[in-house]
Length: 302
Image 1: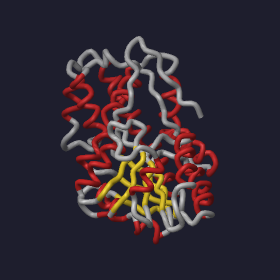
Image 2: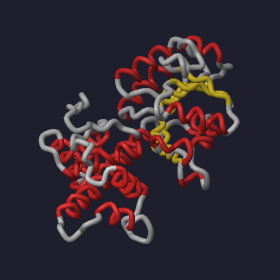
Image 3: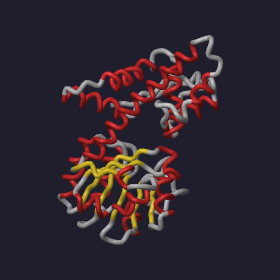
């Protein structure tokens, strides 16, 4: 299968490599011409055979809106566009309707796996029609982890459902990281516990709290046992906020996820060992930037 991939950053570049390794042709575009296969969006579209499939993997919000609008004027009826970024689910219907007027199909796909996805595979959560999702399935199968498809891929429903599932996934992630981080802070505070990194490492096999996030926490502690190089300032990408807003809208109790979101807000006021731990885990699984000691953090504007 042939596909165009726009955005070759930390995840997009690795996705291109994984798709190519599965035997598919990828024409990638990035503003960094050193890693790009095309000079611009028009050149990318020209290099693809109709009917085309183009995957957009750029930052959510204004950047995604701009790229999709540009592509809508370059693609042709019968082409299909996939938004694989962390877009808000409410944006998907707007994009789908605008593209449909020009005969262009749309699929939204939440992608999980961070910087490790190239080797381990990516968890994929898609929304769109059965016909459109099936059309991209060879690429979905190339990206997902090995094993049964339904253990790394879901066609969650109509347009918007993929990003909605990914939003809730990230909300759960907030809560899990906060629990590990608070456990770390208590262990670090207790005088009789002399090797906190070893305690976290010991949990990676046989315990009921073992998980990939817990393994990443152990890895982070091995690199910096006291998080001396990491500030407790923790950014948020927006999906935790959207999850809590949806919980309020539907009257769904979410005390854990809500508390973990608010803890990130607290981290921007006072340094905290627990929030240093959350920051370290985010860096380990997603390559997210950490705020070093003495640096000023960046608050996402929503």
